[in-house]
Length: 308
Ligand SMILES: C[S@@+](CC[C@H](N)C(=O)[O-])C[C@H]1O[C@@H](n2cnc3c(N)ncnc32)[C@H](O)[C@@H]1O
Image (cartoon, rainbow, N blue to C red; front, side, top):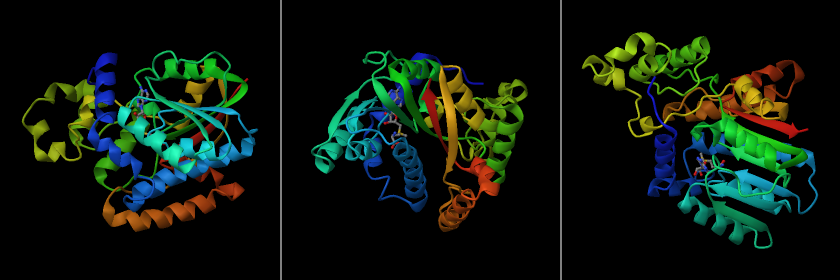
């Protein structure tokens, strides 16, 4: 398995989220390919269902970690919540503040830049709700962040996590299927690229194959198909529902319920419309008690937890 230090990981994540390329995040919820638009909106939709069920009083305080371009923060402000946020990206901080100011001029937004793996700049027991959506996989030490969430949450306060998970329906190619099998068999902790090189060298199979990493064959087009050299500079945490739940539990926050968001078989544009049909079908199915367990096949898990 590739070794990477906390500093290297942080620099790679910070570099990416401060590059011009991420400004597109501004549009990804409404003006992107149907697959991305559906997955982000499904995640947001499921988060909002949990938020609305909790029936917060006007002015309740919510903290969003890694708020990106502010789409979720805006929805919180529109519900009368006082919204605080920390994000690593200067570009997205500017975009998020502008979005919230323009679309909810009466809202209370305090979105700033910072690192959520450092001590948060808030007092103990401050927030009624913390939201972390699509962020945990970038962290080097997600336990530290979760313990900080516990510290700033009020007793009885809630945490909502939206996080992509490892055991989804992704069966688009033999490589992705093989990767899912490796995740399942070896309980991998980090995401693998769907290239044979990554699957063989970066998983637990690396015990046998890592010594061939620099050979000509392991760097051939066949072995590198699906590899992403830029993203390869960082390691992304891989989550199963069980791993998300135990992350919360060991940091003093009790999971209450989980739901799935977005069922899709492939990122291949050829299958976008099929994905949307499958998503609609399985999402409806999970609402029937007997078929609820299908939520485990979703790409994204949305978890609601409470600080006792
Ligand atoms: C995939 S985006 C998700 C954005 C938003 N939560 C959403 O659901 O649209 C990940 C966000 O996490 C932020 N992020 C990643 N690592 C971070 C860190 N260590 N501290 C603060 N923010 C971080 C990035 O800057 C980026 O805005």
